[in-house]
Length: 453
Figure 1 (cartoon, helix red, strand yellow):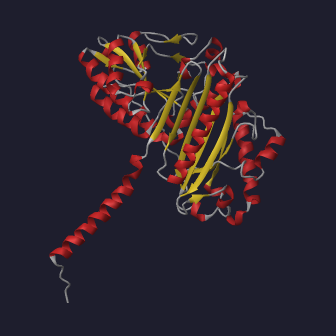
Figure 2 (cartoon, rainbow, N blue to C red):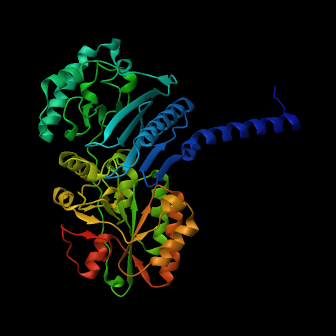
Figure 3 (cartoon, one colour):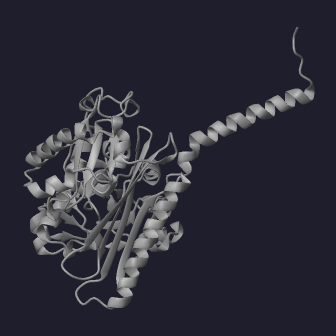
């Protein structure tokens, strides 16, 4: 016996089918709608820089916003009480990074506050969320029978191997206290294809100057120690091949007006990818001054930028004002960024753009990198209007100019592309810093700061 559907029945069936399809599409594309939040506030007393990305999970996003707002209020309260700083402005950096892998979302919130004194104060707060159970978990929840004693020797071995490789001197008392189990000591951990990563913040097992220490424990060492749900299907299949960059023939640009578009504070999956697609229309290549703290979560974008011929420079790891740091921390901010970039693209950057453009001879000597600032400040972070950003670029454009932009803002990317469309008609070619100096026959000097060529 065959079941015949009436016209109404067929219509209901089609509607149900469409609802299911659109529901699946909504789930599939939900991550594309997740917002990246980038805020900069600046006045005569202080600079505030806040970066975080929504996860799409209300419980986590609420925790992130509460943390950010608390840190900002705490900072401004201190500024209001203290009054004007004589030597430098107050400074607050709040950076929240999300790492998603193996059903876990690991959120690391870090704040750096300068409110006078010798250096920044740092505070870390982390949230680890299991999407399968829709709730927060702790490090012990990873372990079979919550048996920390089984993993402790492996943690110590990994830590001492890390210290040996990086030539770090560990303090035995700090190690003993910093590796024993507590919620505070094991607040931040995350998985990636290499294994389980455990983060030790400064002063936990080593000095402030040694910075944040991240040890990696491969999956094959974790069998029988952590639960199978965190091992399943995640074993590494081999070593990734490093990307290759093919340089372009610069002969056709010799008689052109040259301008270097440079982008700070990225990479960002959505906006940097849009920029990379957009510049192809104008035969353009640009220079990215990336933050080391953003590399881990945006490896694919960085590789794409590099392989397509763009130049990768450093903007330090945490965007701290280098003038407020001791020598060891300056070196940590620079070297750590160079290392994470080199690990991803296989090439160590030789260009440095110091945060806020702040530089002196001592930092130049420590960095041993070419310092690249700018002579066209688009003020894109403040304007957030593509037409005004475009006009700022066109107003000051000239041969040899270096344009400052930020590829974490949609309006900055679109403003840059609008400017390129106009400048192309005027005979401009869009080149990287490296291409610029080759075309102009310039040998860079480590003792100088470059604003244009």
